[in-house]
Length: 234
Ligand code: OAD
Image 1: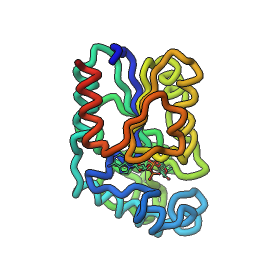
Image 2 (image 1 turned 90 degrees about the horizontal axis):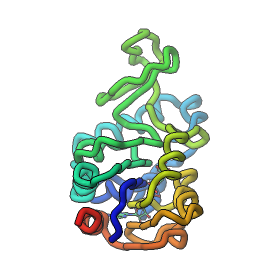
Image 3 (image 1 turned 90 degrees about the vertical axis):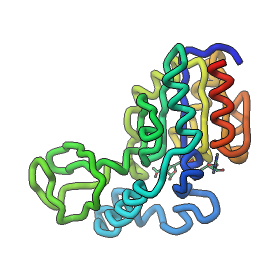
Image 4 (image 1 turned 45 degrees about the vertical axis):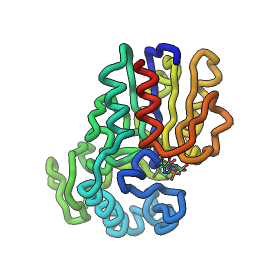
């Protein structure tokens, strides 16, 4: 394995699956039980704010019953021990990377453990339930708080920073994502088009974008990510 100095790791729901967090599109996944247009769009929130808040309250409460596993811990070790920079760009809204010890994380689809005020625009750390009666801790307005989540039809967070990182990295690794949702699904092509960076897919099965990766490793993230990190650090 070459020695890499600037690594970007894109993660998706598959990295949290072994912790007990449902993925979206696998059998029994979240989008089989809930319709996207009912819970994950600005229009759904306008039409049925209580239903949308309940969906995210349920998912936020689940954070207390899950723990990071070997793959999260291995990525934290990579960040700590690599003689270079490691950035995790995650589509996941859980907090398992943080709890696994990673520090350099971009939550491009938002965070369950945060809400934001639609009136004063402040973002708050939030681990409890939130509803339309909950007042904003700063401006006291209600209803005003919404989940700090990127819904379908909204712009992912920090895209300028992510694009710069993709341009600068010498290794791009994708872990546990089906490659169905853009812009994340297009990151590998952006990196590949520069022809100077290596690309590796780690996923249970070939993703939609598997053919764009130079190297593919298929199996459980909890088995494969620690092995990959060992190789990168050796
Ligand atoms: P998906 O549910 O679409 O895909 C999860 C991928 O993880 C699948 O390809 C699985 O094969 C793989 N997988 C499952 N278990 C695994 C394991 N133990 N080890 C490795 N891989 C495993 O989830 P995402 O690709 O993350 O967006 O979905 C992307 C976005 O779509 C989400 O961020 C969410 C969703 O709609 C929003 O809500 C905006």
